[in-house]
Amino acid sequence: MLQDNLLLVLSLLFVISILTMLSGKLKIAYPIFLVIGGLLISLIPGIPRISLHPDLVFLIFLPPLLYAAAWNTSWNDFWRLKRPISLLGFGLVIFTSAAVAWISNLLIPDFSLAAGFLLGGIISPPDAIAATSVLQGLKVPKRATIILEGESLVNDAASLIVFRFALTAVLTSQFNLGEATRTFFVVAIMGILIGLAIAHIVYAIHRFFPTTPAIDAAFTLISPYIMYITAEHFHVSGVLSVVSGGLFLTFRSQDLFTYDARIQVLGLWDTLVFLLNGFVFILIGLQLPEIVRGIEGYSLGEAIRYGVIISLLTIIIRIIWVFPGTYVPRMLFKSIREKEPNPGWRNVLLVGWSGMRGVVSLASALAVPLTLTNNQAFPHRNLILFITFVVILITLVLQGLSLKPLIKILKIKGDETQSEELQALDMRLQLARVVLAHMDGQYAREIEGNETYKRVRDRYARMIEITQKKLEAEETNEEQHNFLPHYRQMLIELVDVRRRELNRFRHAKMFSDELIREREWELDLEEARLRR
Image (tube, rainbow, N blue to C red; front, side, top):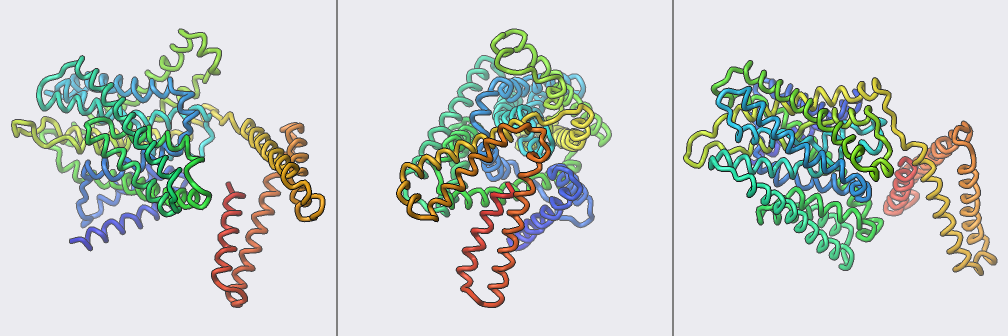
């Protein structure tokens, strides 16, 4: 009944929130914790059987999650590192699919090459959310993070295209390499064009129509679904449609929203992405009993052995790929050596080890039909599903949990901290100079005759003076280094003092609740700015 399903969903959301808080306490990335938590919950007697329908993932979960990932990706960084991103997002997917096809054909009795390519297409793409969540809070080079996030945006499209071709080959027993290659480019390019076309329409609506913050937020929720569904309707890549549209809109985001719309949209998406991510990863863990029950024709030991071998294979393939993918172009092209610094083998190994699989792989496996066109059972379907689950579990848990120790062992450190601090100071200096020039040009008379205007101008003048001194000072100067955190902490304390006073006003009924709420909103914005 509806209320039973609703109660189950709400219970899962409650469990997701609790497990996420525990993962933060234990300092474990929440996708790993949720998968393990779902796995343990599924073993409790009496837990309802939960099946994850692939259409639900592809249609409900995938578009907003991809859109959010694209929105948080810098287009300039993405384009600057397009070569390594493309080598991983497209080249590695095809290489992994071919290697898995060959090995599984040799390893598993009666497992055809077409079925191997199908399995390879399913398990080849690392998960965007898993990679970013696991790396969050770890001090890693910014270049590595950008490459991993960019790869995760495009590899889903490549893997799903390989999956479609392999599925067609299994269903029809026919495969034409030339036709498949042509279709691959058509599907990818048309998906990108559809995404960009819809993104331009969305941009025009945000930019030129009299929207409100609520309408802006609604359009951001609707847009990825329109991009995905439109592209899939024309049998092209819905994933690339959402990614390309999201990247375009994030590039033009400064023109889209007012300040209040931006605050509302960001808050809405933070909550939505958290709930969708949590729901998907805990459902992965809850799938185990259903998957194990579906294994037929193989013992559980055999299925686990196949899954472990192929899991290790996918890990090794990625490491084998990233080193020549990084150094061969540097050896062949002088321009690359001149423009890009040597990443170092440690950073390359970090990228190679960060290949956690996730929801797209499981959804693709579930999308394999039950029967062939002649109504015979789809060969090895249950085994493919089980191997996919094992690959997700091993890569997510083994690689995810070992990333932090690996970073410590390899002594990998974030290399942008000092540079970003200097850039922040330089930005503050330039903004203050622009303000000062504007005030001197537009409000010269008010500054001379009004003390309030003069104090505002003096504040920016002092800001310029202080910032210039910081830029000229040595970065190792401890006093300069510790000044800003202490100063910021004092400002946060002052916000808290005012908030307590507002609470006293409310209890004493000294002012109207509406006025108090307005001041609390101002304090919330001020504290958010200080803490970020």
